[in-house]
Length: 205
Image 1 (cartoon, rainbow, N blue to C red):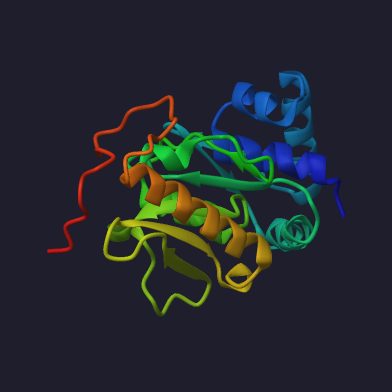
Image 2 (tube, rainbow, N blue to C red):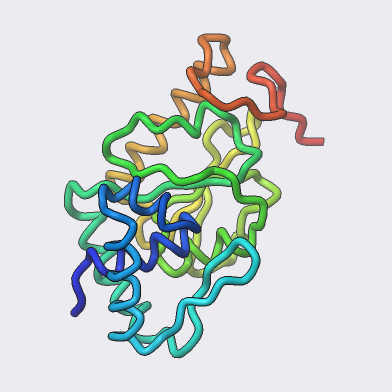
C-alpha cells in the first residue's frame, strides 16, 4: 500500500490539471507534488500523460484503481475532506468553497466524459452536473440526485456505493438549501458570474 499523500498528488494533477493548483489545495510545495506523483507512477508502473489540458494515466490501471477504492473508502469514513467539482455551467452559488468538509475543485469543466471518468475512478468523490450530462439510470457504478427537482437542472453525481452515506446526504441537504436561498433572492455570495441567472426558472420542455 502506498501513502495516501503520494496517490493524492498524482490524482490531484489529473483532477486539478496543474502542480500549482494541487500545491495550493494540499498545502504542499510544487516540487513535492511533482516528486510524490512520480513516485506513485513508479510504484504502480504507469505513466502520466497530458493530452491538451487534461492529464491521464497510461498503462495497466488495475492496481492503482484498487488502491483508489481503498483510499476513497477510508476518506468517506473519516473526517478527511472529500473532493467535489462540477461543470462550468452549474449555478454559481454551488461553487463557493466555504465547507471545510469538502475540497472544492476548478468548476471549469465542459467535457462530461472526462468528469465521469474522474468520478468512476474515485479521483473525485462528488460531481455537480447539469441534467443533460448525467449518466443513464441503468448505470451500475454511478447515481445522480437532483438538488431541486422541477426547479433547477443541477444534479449531484456520486458512486452508487456512497449514495446513502451520511456525508453525501448532508451535502445534498446543504447544497439544496443553498440553491433554494439563491433562487429566492437571498444572494449567491459567489465570486464568479455564470450565464445562468439566479432567478431564471428551469424550463423542462
